[in-house]
Structure formats: structure tokens, C-alpha cells
Image (cartoon, rainbow, N blue to C red; front, side, top):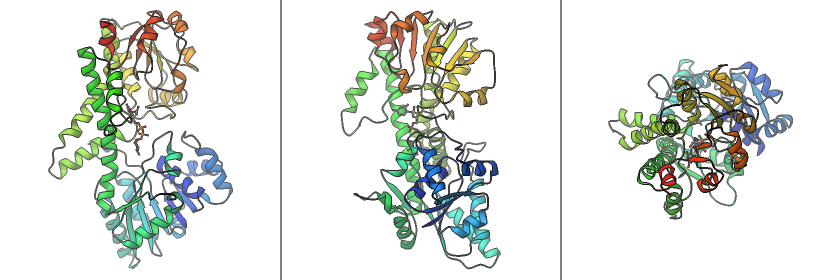
Length: 446
Ligand code: UDX
């Protein structure tokens, strides 16, 4: 099928590339000419495993092209995807200006029937707004062209986006006409072999499904962080508790890892946006607000452990920080817990030597050059002349350090483990004090 995709950001680029990979003829549109030129030459603006070779191969095969020419792309597409950003506006709600601008462009240029698909994460009711904008544009130029607006939310995880897109758990399609659903089923047929993954529903349910999925996952994390904080106070170890509850299939093993709080482009934004939508329709979403409050508090927890260990005397100390990205396998720093930690350390007068396998450049872009931040080339280099180590992101390469060498490197012989990567007994046996999430007090009481 011939497809047009508006937006070559994270979602648009991954979706467009995967759809080309299965044989569709895809044109991606972006208003950023440099980005479009770069993509044509194989310059991929984001770090995502497996994406770059796939973009290059499909571009070379003529199935994936990039343009700034919206009219040409609309003429090309039987199905037109909207995958542009929805940044939070001043009050935190999703700003629809880019989505609605694309809708207007579609209305201006549409010359034959098409299905318009919304992929961006947007509040419930947005498809109706998109439909209204396109209809108004068509009417203004006296054109009578049939079109459908479909909600087809993405469930991509950064770092696994290509895999999630090629092998989805489910494909949610919200549409108001059987014809549109049929077309979408044909489009996704290559991803729907062996068992049925397509869940068809009305548009508003599809829009809400996306928020419900992210809010549920965020709730699991905040729940575990809450229990972790209780564990710390009562002298229990959250890692034992996690294993004790995860084995219940009704609870499950996924997303019950306590840590330094969740970040990224989705959870923080979507939990708040859903709470706001609820408020707008007269429902106070107390659970969602608590999920957000717990997460916000959790982002300060590592620093609290540090301050407690040093009885508040943090000034003048130097900390090695391992991991800056909001999670492993990405360079994304949006809402990353490391940002809060760095700021708190600096505010308290401490110095930071930080290492992240991918996010160093992004960190420099955000914080600029400053005397109290040294960005290092390796995990080992970050340990040069430091007092203590703080682990913020669980990159694989941080999982089994040589603790004897760490003891020699860390002047104060202490590790603050924001992701519970290490076995406290092993760390302590090496002569290093250990603080994890939800297990600090229990270790001291041993
Ligand atoms: C998420 C959803 O998983 C995805 O389906 C949706 O489309 C977009 O949002 P993403 O933001 O890429 O994806 O990251 P994810 O792997 O879900 O992690 C989010 C955050 O939660 C990270 O900061 C991670 O460290 C944290 N997390 C995750 C925990 O603290 N504990 C856990 O048990 C799991």
C-alpha cells in the first residue's frame, strides 16, 4: 500500500521504516529540511538499535523516502499517518498544535478518499477534532471527498522500538467505519501472522487504551517504590518482597522494579495528561495523582540516601555517576532521574564525574559546560579521584564491576545503587558500604 507519514520523530520514523520493511511504499514528511536531507543520506537523528541499517536498506530499495513536500506526500498516500509531537503546553496538557496543523494540511491537499491515522499520543476526543479540521478545510475549498479518521496508538519502548514495531503484542485500531478497519487490517496483515493481534474498537476507546496502558505501568512502578520506602523503614528488603510477589501470575514479574523513579517521554506526560482529562470531565483521578506524586518524591530519594549517609555533609565531595539516560539503550534524557540527582548534588556543593554509554552529548546539551561536571569516556574514568559511586541507570555494563577495584577507587568506600543492581552482601564483603532502594535499613540491621 502507498503510505504517507507526517513526522520523522521517534514514532514516525520507526513506524514508517517498519511499514516499508514489510513491503509498503512509504513517504515520510517533515518540515525540517536538514533532517530530511540527512535521512536521505542515512543520518538517523535518534539512537535506536537496528533502526539505522533498516532505514538505509529500505531507502536504497526505493520503499522509503523522505520529503518536505506535504502536498506530494498526501497525493501519494492511501493511508496518511499523523505522527508528530504533542509536547506538554504550559499547564501540562498535550499541545495539539502540530497534530491539528497536519490535519489542516491534509484538508488543504486531499484530492481522493483516504484513511487518516492518528499515531501520536493524544487526549481522548482528538480524532474528532482532526476530523473537524479536515472537514472544514475540504468545505472551504468546496471539495467533497470521503475520509476516515482512525486512532492507532503506538506502544513502542525506546531501545526496543524496532522489535516492538515488527512484533507487536497487539495492534489497537479505533475506527468508526468497517471500511476503515478493513483497510487497516490489510495494512497490518504482515505483522498479524500466527495469531490475531488486532484489537478493533471505537475511536475513543482506542485513544483511552493508550493512556490506560501507560498509566497502569506507571502505577506498578510507583506502587513498588512506595513499598520500597516502607521496606526501608521497617527493615525489610524490597528485592525479597519483589520476588515474593512477582511469582503470583496475577501480579507478574514485569514493571515491579523499584528504582530512582520513572522518566522518559511517555509515563510522566501521559499520567498527568490522563489526570487532567479526567478533571476536565468532572472526575478527580486520585490514584493517578498519587502515582505522579510518588514518582516525583522517588526522584529525590537517591540524594536523600546520600545526604543521610554523609549526615548532610555533601559539600566538596566528588561523586561518580554511572548512567544518565532515563533508561538503558537510549540517549534520551527526558524526565531522567539523573537530572534531579545532578541538580541536587550541585546545589549541595558536590562535584560530579559522570559516564553514560550514549547520553553524554545530550547531557552536555542540557547542562552546558560547568566546572562541577566532568563527562567521562568510560565507567572506569568516572571513578578517578571520587569519594563515592552512584548508579542511576541500569546499563548492562554496570552490572558486575570488580568490587575490589571499586574499593580502592572510592575514597569513602560507599555505593548508592539507584537500581538495586548489586548484591549487598557481596558489596559489603568487599569492604564497601552499600545503599540501595528499599533495602538500606535492612542491610544495616543485619
Ligand atoms: C513506555 C511504555 O513501556 C511504552 O509501551 C509506551 O509506548 C511508551 O512509554 P518507554 O518510555 O520507552 O516506554 O520506557 P519503559 O521501558 O517503559 O520505561 C519507563 C521508565 O520506567 C524508565 O525510566 C524505567 O527505568 C522505569 N521503570 C521501568 C522502573 O523504574 N521500574 C520498572 O520495573 C520498569
